[in-house]
Amino acid sequence: MTWTVAITIAIGVILKMIMSPPSLVVDWLTSKFSLHPKLNSKDVTVTFNGNLLEEKASMRITDYFNEATFLKKYYIYPGNENLFLHPGTNVTPIVIHSKNGNKDVNFFVFSYDDHVDVVKQRGKKVVAYRLRSDHLQNYATSEKVV
Image 1: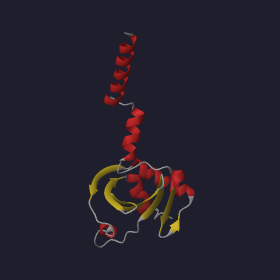
Image 2: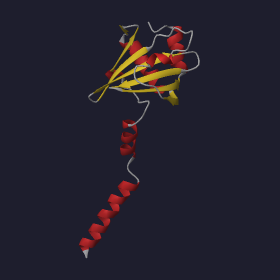
Image 3: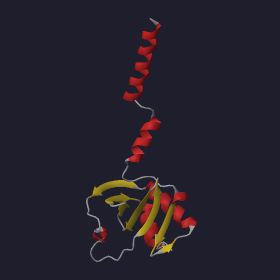
Image 4: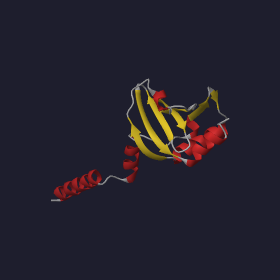
């Protein structure tokens, strides 16, 4: 009789964990598959015009990137990253290089007055999306990231 009660309780606990997992598990799963991940400033290198930015500026850009609001996703093909340049504009992207596990991830951040376009390249996969970040837009246009 005690074995059946123990087995019933064990099955109940397992079902409870499957039906409503702890928030730690849910956070881990959503971060694994998120399009716009939160970056750790210690694992990131930021370049602009081929020049590596100093640590303080790199941390600031990473914080602005993390605080940005996701707007929408675009579908592009690998090699077409420059299609994000609006006609008649001369925008140099901020390149954020991050290491996610054993994979290298590059973010090409194109900043405009009203939005930020991001091209995320992980291995051969390329995904593009639009962000809204007042701080990142103002930082990139006013200080020219130098």
